[in-house]
Length: 147
Ligand code: FES
Image (tube, rainbow, N blue to C red; front, side, top):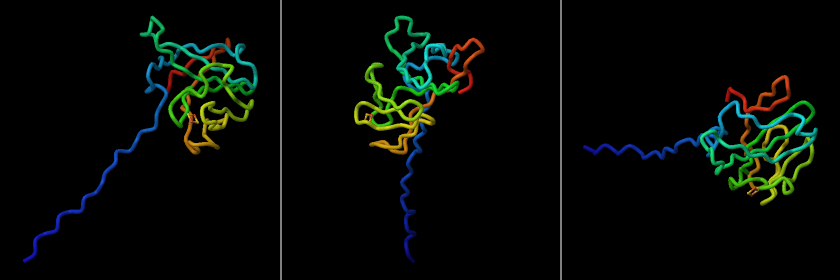
């Protein structure tokens, strides 16, 4: 009579959930005002920061990027998919090709303007974290209520 064989060990890895903007540290609430369409020229990418409501002392900025192409405005967390650091700490450091791409100024990963996917660099195939927006009739840009 033979002993039953032990069941093979199966390595189970927890699937890593993709990051979403509202799970990032210091994320503001949906509905937070980010600016006005008049402040973002066509083809411009802007470095912005806002503060969560509970951060009344404004100690912990939530950093994001606003990109405008025509009447289309989009936002991404200012967080490179490579090392999780800002693509640019200040406006004058931000590198972008209007309507086409935006690049990290650390190791120069390049992301598509249209969807935030890295198409060149160390994190090719990964993405910036999109932040859904809504623009009201007066042109005010807010984080959308629906995530
Ligand atoms: S940290 Fe952005 S490309 Fe390396």
